[in-house]
Image 1 (cartoon, rainbow, N blue to C red):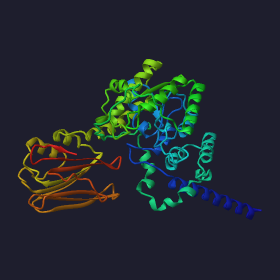
Image 2: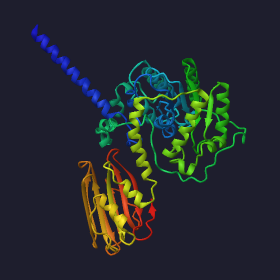
Image 3: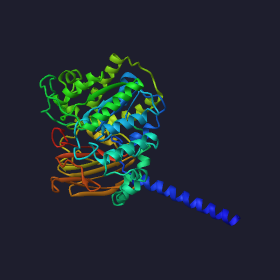
Image 4: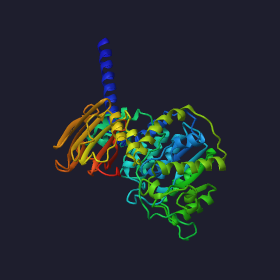
Length: 494
């Protein structure tokens, strides 16, 4: 009897080990997208489950256009309205519907704001109007419940190329990822453990698109046709919100994909369902927000942090003025503001063109700073600049280094620098050897070139003067590259 019992215990232990190993394997091979803290994608959903129950006033849903447009922290800081952004890359309206249902198991929002980009045909070769990878990025992190089981069944019923088993045992679907695993796959938990932006993704680029113009409603009569499946699930979202007593606001954020034809369809649809539709591409709304596409959009469809402030502020005013939302404090959003401010500071760095201000901002323990000179570094240097460089821990004599070479690396309390008239090179690593760098500086006398390679990628602008690359150790990425012409005029080049 004891022998049988011991055998059973060993068998149970073995089965438990197999289950744990399969679980770990599933998690490791699961398709993830955690580019950096500014675009956390997968952890958007994992962090959602950490929010205290019934504390979210507003949910944002939609594609990556939504993710980069609506900042919950900005909405809280301005209006003290609590919100969470559940958008994701290429988010199908079907996925939006199931994430809304999932969210309602944990939260009782008063309003839902849904971006309508994917209402219209997008990935027309796919059954779900978005790629399988995008669908899985949103569905895989969802906790298992009747909602997820129904979502998986519906997705696989709609798309015959997907199987339900692959959602339960993700290693079946992703076993081929072994050759594609990167550092982020193994450090994902440490990355996602950092503070989050309540699902929002902060971007800092500027589109520079001077050709974009908002449209005038009524300038055309034609209406665009939605994707049939997307309309079906848009109806489901409307019905669900009405059944739950939730205000639903349809929106379209500033985008080159917007058109008066799409506006015509959605305006008529919203009117027929007695809901509101806000199109930021309509001239009156665009002007009221003070929007400037060239400087407020990151690219053709995604907003940068400055555009997101304007768009978020506008919808906040709508919530207050039209729907009677009132301010209230919440410790979760109070706490997350500190991290939001660090991200905003990183973004602001990319716009600074004054070298004095720039060097002051570099005095930040979160940064590793790389410098390399091309042509000349000394002619435009003055006492204030030398003092600022000294405050960063630099000590080389540069004021008389006419057409000489110079490099520096500042990593916390450690500083490496060298000045001279020959070709200067430096090799090393950051983050305990996780990433390698190689710097070359040649002043005019040595050959007139420079290079700052990080993991074999060139980041130096390669222009005359002091080339600076800033690496953020928190987000594990380069956040800025600029060259200041320290030979003449101190002009910034990006």
